[in-house]
Image 1 (cartoon, rainbow, N blue to C red):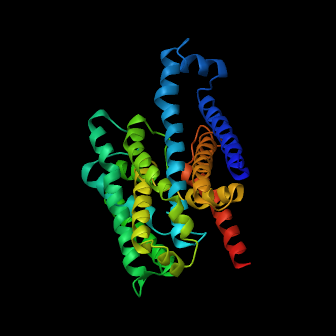
Image 2: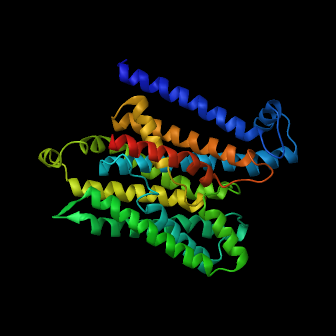
Image 3: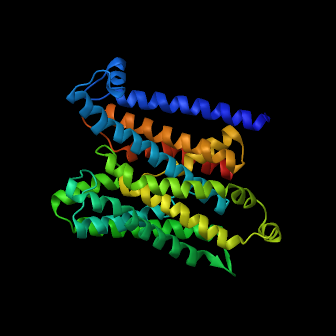
Length: 342
Protein backbone atom coordinates (compact mmCIF):
# COMPACT_ATOMS: atom_id res chain seq x y z
CA UNK A 1 0.00 0.00 0.00
CA UNK A 2 1.43 3.43 -0.93
CA UNK A 3 2.66 5.49 2.00
CA UNK A 4 0.23 8.38 1.40
CA UNK A 5 -2.77 6.05 1.19
CA UNK A 6 -1.81 4.22 4.38
CA UNK A 7 -1.34 7.58 6.13
CA UNK A 8 -4.81 8.62 4.95
CA UNK A 9 -6.40 5.42 6.30
CA UNK A 10 -4.65 5.81 9.67
CA UNK A 11 -5.68 9.47 9.87
CA UNK A 12 -9.30 8.71 8.98
CA UNK A 13 -9.41 5.88 11.54
CA UNK A 14 -8.14 8.17 14.29
CA UNK A 15 -10.56 10.91 13.22
CA UNK A 16 -13.45 8.46 13.27
CA UNK A 17 -12.58 7.37 16.80
CA UNK A 18 -12.29 11.00 17.97
CA UNK A 19 -15.69 11.72 16.41
CA UNK A 20 -17.22 8.73 18.22
CA UNK A 21 -15.76 9.96 21.51
CA UNK A 22 -17.17 13.44 20.91
CA UNK A 23 -20.58 11.96 20.12
CA UNK A 24 -20.45 9.74 23.22
CA UNK A 25 -19.62 12.70 25.49
CA UNK A 26 -22.43 14.71 23.92
CA UNK A 27 -24.91 11.83 24.20
CA UNK A 28 -24.28 11.03 27.87
CA UNK A 29 -24.06 14.58 29.26
CA UNK A 30 -26.67 17.22 29.95
CA UNK A 31 -29.49 18.03 32.34
CA UNK A 32 -30.49 14.34 32.21
CA UNK A 33 -27.17 12.44 32.48
CA UNK A 34 -26.96 8.91 31.13
CA UNK A 35 -24.56 6.08 31.87
CA UNK A 36 -22.82 4.06 29.19
CA UNK A 37 -24.94 0.98 29.91
CA UNK A 38 -28.17 3.01 29.73
CA UNK A 39 -27.16 4.45 26.35
CA UNK A 40 -26.25 1.09 24.82
CA UNK A 41 -29.29 -0.70 26.25
CA UNK A 42 -31.53 1.99 24.76
CA UNK A 43 -29.77 2.14 21.39
CA UNK A 44 -29.71 -1.64 21.01
CA UNK A 45 -33.27 -1.95 22.35
CA UNK A 46 -32.26 -4.40 25.12
CA UNK A 47 -33.92 -2.35 27.79
CA UNK A 48 -35.50 1.04 27.30
CA UNK A 49 -37.92 3.44 28.93
CA UNK A 50 -39.99 6.27 27.55
CA UNK A 51 -37.72 8.79 29.27
CA UNK A 52 -34.54 7.30 27.80
CA UNK A 53 -36.10 7.05 24.34
CA UNK A 54 -37.22 10.67 24.51
CA UNK A 55 -33.84 12.00 25.62
CA UNK A 56 -31.75 9.93 23.19
CA UNK A 57 -33.87 9.61 20.04
CA UNK A 58 -35.88 12.85 20.16
CA UNK A 59 -33.41 15.30 21.69
CA UNK A 60 -29.76 14.30 21.65
CA UNK A 61 -29.21 12.05 18.63
CA UNK A 62 -30.86 14.46 16.12
CA UNK A 63 -28.77 17.28 17.57
CA UNK A 64 -25.54 15.28 17.33
CA UNK A 65 -26.25 14.06 13.78
CA UNK A 66 -27.18 17.59 12.69
CA UNK A 67 -23.95 18.98 14.17
CA UNK A 68 -21.87 16.31 12.39
CA UNK A 69 -23.59 16.86 9.03
CA UNK A 70 -23.39 20.65 9.23
CA UNK A 71 -19.71 20.42 10.14
CA UNK A 72 -19.09 18.15 7.16
CA UNK A 73 -21.01 20.37 4.74
CA UNK A 74 -19.27 23.58 5.81
CA UNK A 75 -15.87 21.85 5.74
CA UNK A 76 -16.44 20.58 2.20
CA UNK A 77 -17.57 24.02 1.06
CA UNK A 78 -14.46 25.52 2.63
CA UNK A 79 -12.22 23.10 0.72
CA UNK A 80 -13.87 24.14 -2.55
CA UNK A 81 -13.68 27.88 -1.89
CA UNK A 82 -10.05 27.76 -0.82
CA UNK A 83 -9.27 25.63 -3.85
CA UNK A 84 -10.90 27.79 -6.51
CA UNK A 85 -9.72 31.10 -5.01
CA UNK A 86 -6.19 29.90 -4.14
CA UNK A 87 -6.76 31.82 -0.93
CA UNK A 88 -6.17 30.03 2.37
CA UNK A 89 -8.40 32.54 4.19
CA UNK A 90 -11.52 31.87 2.09
CA UNK A 91 -14.54 30.67 4.06
CA UNK A 92 -18.28 30.56 3.27
CA UNK A 93 -18.98 32.92 6.17
CA UNK A 94 -16.25 35.40 5.33
CA UNK A 95 -17.07 35.85 1.64
CA UNK A 96 -20.81 36.28 2.06
CA UNK A 97 -22.44 32.99 1.05
CA UNK A 98 -23.64 32.29 4.60
CA UNK A 99 -25.09 35.78 4.82
CA UNK A 100 -26.94 35.49 1.49
CA UNK A 101 -28.46 32.14 2.40
CA UNK A 102 -29.32 33.34 5.90
CA UNK A 103 -31.00 36.50 4.59
CA UNK A 104 -33.24 34.53 2.21
CA UNK A 105 -34.20 32.13 5.00
CA UNK A 106 -35.05 34.97 7.42
CA UNK A 107 -37.30 36.52 4.75
CA UNK A 108 -38.90 33.09 4.30
CA UNK A 109 -39.40 32.85 8.07
CA UNK A 110 -41.01 36.30 8.08
CA UNK A 111 -43.54 35.61 5.32
CA UNK A 112 -44.34 31.97 6.10
CA UNK A 113 -44.09 32.06 9.91
CA UNK A 114 -41.57 29.22 10.13
CA UNK A 115 -39.71 28.77 13.41
CA UNK A 116 -36.42 26.99 12.84
CA UNK A 117 -35.80 26.36 16.54
CA UNK A 118 -39.01 24.42 17.09
CA UNK A 119 -40.86 22.41 14.47
CA UNK A 120 -44.45 21.30 14.53
CA UNK A 121 -46.01 18.64 12.31
CA UNK A 122 -47.88 21.19 10.20
CA UNK A 123 -44.62 22.91 9.25
CA UNK A 124 -42.69 19.86 8.01
CA UNK A 125 -43.20 20.74 4.34
CA UNK A 126 -41.97 24.26 5.00
CA UNK A 127 -38.87 22.91 6.74
CA UNK A 128 -38.10 20.65 3.78
CA UNK A 129 -38.16 23.57 1.32
CA UNK A 130 -36.14 25.97 3.50
CA UNK A 131 -32.81 24.83 1.92
CA UNK A 132 -34.20 25.82 -1.49
CA UNK A 133 -34.74 29.38 -0.30
CA UNK A 134 -31.29 29.30 1.27
CA UNK A 135 -29.84 28.21 -2.06
CA UNK A 136 -31.57 31.10 -3.84
CA UNK A 137 -30.09 33.58 -1.37
CA UNK A 138 -26.66 31.98 -1.44
CA UNK A 139 -26.70 31.78 -5.25
CA UNK A 140 -27.73 35.45 -5.45
CA UNK A 141 -24.82 36.40 -3.20
CA UNK A 142 -22.45 34.21 -5.23
CA UNK A 143 -23.75 35.70 -8.53
CA UNK A 144 -23.12 39.25 -7.35
CA UNK A 145 -19.66 38.24 -6.17
CA UNK A 146 -18.91 36.57 -9.51
CA UNK A 147 -20.12 39.53 -11.58
CA UNK A 148 -18.15 42.01 -9.50
CA UNK A 149 -14.99 39.90 -9.44
CA UNK A 150 -14.64 39.29 -13.19
CA UNK A 151 -11.86 41.21 -14.87
CA UNK A 152 -10.90 40.83 -18.53
CA UNK A 153 -13.06 37.71 -18.80
CA UNK A 154 -11.46 36.00 -15.81
CA UNK A 155 -12.20 35.79 -12.12
CA UNK A 156 -9.98 38.09 -10.06
CA UNK A 157 -9.55 36.24 -6.78
CA UNK A 158 -8.58 39.28 -4.73
CA UNK A 159 -11.68 41.13 -5.93
CA UNK A 160 -13.74 38.03 -5.16
CA UNK A 161 -12.64 38.02 -1.52
CA UNK A 162 -13.11 41.79 -1.07
CA UNK A 163 -16.50 41.75 -2.82
CA UNK A 164 -17.53 38.80 -0.66
CA UNK A 165 -16.74 40.72 2.51
CA UNK A 166 -18.85 43.65 1.27
CA UNK A 167 -21.72 41.31 0.29
CA UNK A 168 -21.50 39.67 3.71
CA UNK A 169 -22.00 43.05 5.37
CA UNK A 170 -24.86 44.02 3.04
CA UNK A 171 -26.83 40.81 3.46
CA UNK A 172 -26.26 40.86 7.22
CA UNK A 173 -27.83 44.33 7.31
CA UNK A 174 -30.80 43.09 5.26
CA UNK A 175 -31.20 40.12 7.60
CA UNK A 176 -31.28 42.46 10.59
CA UNK A 177 -33.84 44.69 8.84
CA UNK A 178 -36.25 41.80 8.16
CA UNK A 179 -35.79 40.26 11.59
CA UNK A 180 -36.66 43.59 13.24
CA UNK A 181 -39.96 43.59 11.33
CA UNK A 182 -41.00 40.34 13.05
CA UNK A 183 -43.07 40.25 16.21
CA UNK A 184 -41.26 39.72 19.50
CA UNK A 185 -41.47 35.92 19.74
CA UNK A 186 -40.51 35.36 16.09
CA UNK A 187 -37.62 37.81 16.44
CA UNK A 188 -36.26 35.93 19.44
CA UNK A 189 -36.41 32.67 17.49
CA UNK A 190 -34.73 34.26 14.46
CA UNK A 191 -32.04 35.89 16.61
CA UNK A 192 -31.14 32.58 18.28
CA UNK A 193 -31.07 30.83 14.90
CA UNK A 194 -28.95 33.56 13.24
CA UNK A 195 -26.23 33.21 15.88
CA UNK A 196 -25.82 29.56 14.97
CA UNK A 197 -27.95 27.14 16.94
CA UNK A 198 -28.80 23.46 16.66
CA UNK A 199 -29.98 22.83 20.21
CA UNK A 200 -33.60 22.15 19.16
CA UNK A 201 -32.79 20.13 16.06
CA UNK A 202 -34.86 17.11 15.04
CA UNK A 203 -34.97 14.41 12.37
CA UNK A 204 -36.88 16.65 9.96
CA UNK A 205 -33.88 18.97 9.84
CA UNK A 206 -31.64 16.00 9.09
CA UNK A 207 -33.99 14.83 6.33
CA UNK A 208 -34.11 18.31 4.77
CA UNK A 209 -30.34 18.69 4.44
CA UNK A 210 -29.12 15.12 3.89
CA UNK A 211 -30.00 14.82 0.15
CA UNK A 212 -28.15 18.07 -0.57
CA UNK A 213 -25.04 16.90 1.26
CA UNK A 214 -25.00 13.47 -0.40
CA UNK A 215 -25.58 14.63 -3.98
CA UNK A 216 -23.36 17.72 -3.89
CA UNK A 217 -20.71 16.04 -1.73
CA UNK A 218 -20.32 13.18 -4.20
CA UNK A 219 -20.20 15.64 -7.11
CA UNK A 220 -17.50 17.75 -5.45
CA UNK A 221 -15.40 14.72 -4.51
CA UNK A 222 -15.50 13.54 -8.12
CA UNK A 223 -14.09 16.96 -9.04
CA UNK A 224 -11.20 16.73 -6.56
CA UNK A 225 -8.66 16.43 -9.37
CA UNK A 226 -9.91 19.74 -10.82
CA UNK A 227 -9.15 21.48 -7.52
CA UNK A 228 -5.63 20.06 -7.71
CA UNK A 229 -5.21 21.59 -11.17
CA UNK A 230 -6.45 24.94 -9.87
CA UNK A 231 -3.22 25.24 -7.88
CA UNK A 232 -1.34 25.64 -11.18
CA UNK A 233 -1.08 28.82 -13.22
CA UNK A 234 -4.24 29.59 -15.20
CA UNK A 235 -2.47 29.39 -18.56
CA UNK A 236 -1.25 25.91 -17.69
CA UNK A 237 -4.77 24.81 -16.70
CA UNK A 238 -6.26 26.08 -19.97
CA UNK A 239 -3.50 24.34 -21.96
CA UNK A 240 -4.63 21.04 -20.39
CA UNK A 241 -8.06 21.45 -22.00
CA UNK A 242 -9.89 22.33 -18.81
CA UNK A 243 -12.69 24.90 -19.11
CA UNK A 244 -11.42 26.97 -16.19
CA UNK A 245 -14.23 29.46 -15.65
CA UNK A 246 -17.03 26.92 -16.16
CA UNK A 247 -15.50 24.53 -13.64
CA UNK A 248 -15.10 27.36 -11.12
CA UNK A 249 -18.75 28.35 -11.48
CA UNK A 250 -19.97 24.73 -11.17
CA UNK A 251 -17.92 24.12 -8.05
CA UNK A 252 -18.91 27.47 -6.56
CA UNK A 253 -22.62 26.70 -7.06
CA UNK A 254 -22.14 23.25 -5.55
CA UNK A 255 -20.53 24.80 -2.48
CA UNK A 256 -23.39 27.33 -2.31
CA UNK A 257 -25.82 24.41 -2.20
CA UNK A 258 -23.91 22.79 0.65
CA UNK A 259 -23.76 26.01 2.64
CA UNK A 260 -27.46 26.74 2.05
CA UNK A 261 -28.49 23.31 3.31
CA UNK A 262 -26.33 23.78 6.41
CA UNK A 263 -27.50 27.34 7.11
CA UNK A 264 -31.14 26.25 6.77
CA UNK A 265 -30.86 24.04 9.87
CA UNK A 266 -28.12 25.68 11.93
CA UNK A 267 -28.07 29.37 11.10
CA UNK A 268 -24.81 31.08 10.26
CA UNK A 269 -21.84 29.24 11.74
CA UNK A 270 -18.51 30.62 10.63
CA UNK A 271 -14.91 29.43 10.60
CA UNK A 272 -15.58 25.67 10.22
CA UNK A 273 -14.97 26.04 6.49
CA UNK A 274 -11.79 27.96 7.27
CA UNK A 275 -10.26 25.70 9.93
CA UNK A 276 -11.14 22.20 8.70
CA UNK A 277 -9.30 22.35 5.32
CA UNK A 278 -6.20 23.84 7.00
CA UNK A 279 -6.06 21.11 9.62
CA UNK A 280 -6.65 18.45 6.96
CA UNK A 281 -3.82 19.75 4.76
CA UNK A 282 -1.45 19.68 7.73
CA UNK A 283 -2.37 16.04 8.33
CA UNK A 284 -2.43 14.55 4.81
CA UNK A 285 -0.91 17.08 2.39
CA UNK A 286 -2.40 19.16 -0.40
CA UNK A 287 -4.04 16.57 -2.69
CA UNK A 288 -7.78 17.21 -2.54
CA UNK A 289 -8.87 13.57 -2.79
CA UNK A 290 -7.13 13.14 0.58
CA UNK A 291 -7.96 16.58 1.99
CA UNK A 292 -11.71 16.25 1.43
CA UNK A 293 -12.50 13.14 3.52
CA UNK A 294 -10.23 14.31 6.35
CA UNK A 295 -11.84 17.76 6.25
CA UNK A 296 -15.27 16.13 6.61
CA UNK A 297 -14.23 14.43 9.83
CA UNK A 298 -12.44 17.52 11.17
CA UNK A 299 -15.52 19.66 10.49
CA UNK A 300 -17.81 17.13 12.17
CA UNK A 301 -15.53 16.84 15.22
CA UNK A 302 -15.18 20.61 15.57
CA UNK A 303 -18.93 21.21 15.51
CA UNK A 304 -20.00 18.22 17.64
CA UNK A 305 -17.43 19.07 20.30
CA UNK A 306 -18.27 22.79 20.14
CA UNK A 307 -21.94 21.95 20.64
CA UNK A 308 -20.99 19.72 23.59
CA UNK A 309 -19.18 22.70 25.13
CA UNK A 310 -22.07 25.06 24.35
CA UNK A 311 -24.47 22.67 26.08
CA UNK A 312 -22.47 22.00 29.24
CA UNK A 313 -20.06 24.79 30.17
CA UNK A 314 -22.70 27.21 31.45
CA UNK A 315 -25.39 24.62 32.22
CA UNK A 316 -28.34 24.96 32.70
CA UNK A 317 -27.93 27.96 30.35
CA UNK A 318 -26.79 27.06 26.82
CA UNK A 319 -24.59 29.11 24.51
CA UNK A 320 -25.17 29.22 20.78
CA UNK A 321 -22.76 26.83 19.11
CA UNK A 322 -21.87 29.60 16.63
CA UNK A 323 -20.44 31.64 19.50
CA UNK A 324 -18.28 28.73 20.72
CA UNK A 325 -16.95 28.10 17.20
CA UNK A 326 -16.17 31.82 16.80
CA UNK A 327 -14.21 31.85 20.08
CA UNK A 328 -11.90 29.27 18.52
CA UNK A 329 -12.14 30.44 14.91
CA UNK A 330 -11.29 34.12 15.34
CA UNK A 331 -7.88 33.50 16.98
CA UNK A 332 -7.19 30.82 14.36
CA UNK A 333 -8.08 33.26 11.57
CA UNK A 334 -5.75 35.91 13.05
CA UNK A 335 -3.00 33.30 13.35
CA UNK A 336 -3.38 32.40 9.66
CA UNK A 337 -3.41 36.09 8.73
CA UNK A 338 -0.16 36.74 10.60
CA UNK A 339 1.36 33.58 9.15
CA UNK A 340 0.39 34.65 5.61
CA UNK A 341 2.01 38.05 6.11
CA UNK A 342 5.14 36.35 7.41
